[in-house]
Image 1: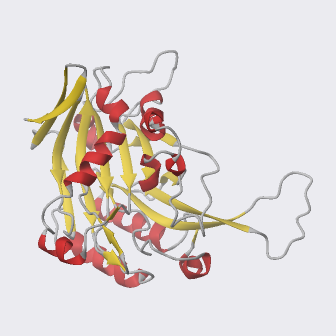
Image 2: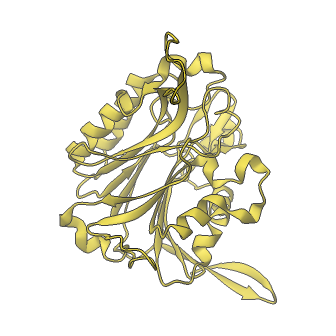
Length: 332
């Protein structure tokens, strides 16, 4: 499977400018024969809005704003599936028997991702389940919870999907067909709910495991505490502390000993918004059997495309071994 992450530094509220930057980065990259392209959370609006009033001019109707338009156009042009984050607004549907005379009708907002096919079909629409403090002034938690669905990749790429296909889960009659069972998440979803749920609940990873997902897509705007000078001087080096944390939150998938190699795609952003810096480090990893394969990873300050082919040998392997009751990781 040929997977790409587009990592860049969008400017807050500069949608046309950010779209133009994304297009320029795509033009400069090798986009031939892609199966999947993943962009960050709130990719074209930026993330660090201080209030509902601040983000309101940039809210997009469900699957109908500039982000969706770009995704459909790009998926068609690159002939691949595209997944990208955007700030969604929608009308609240009145409950049966309630008065619907309110004008204008009440609205509700979500931090969402849209995933589209090369033909323009909406394949998945996910709303963030665990909100970060920056989301809370303007967004609501997902009204439907976690999302696992099947992405129907092109028949021409079927040979590359064979390693990803799940056998039918016990006691189901679901037909996988030409698709891959995929779990979607957005940034804070990887963390314990509100940072107060037990660490070992691993809500997101446990859901992916229990729903037999073999592909994990995470769009993020993951922050870093590094000052500007460190971000600049270490731009091409991944933030290994961030990577280590991400992997620690995927523990149920890494530890799974069911013979299935799962692929996790984490598409993060980089740059700064005011006092907030972002960790970059977009990565494509394979997990399972207490091992982690890393096919490719970007630096914390790099703008550009990470493109990997999961049919090729991984660049690094991390293997977890038990020793005297404790686990430790080794690079191979």
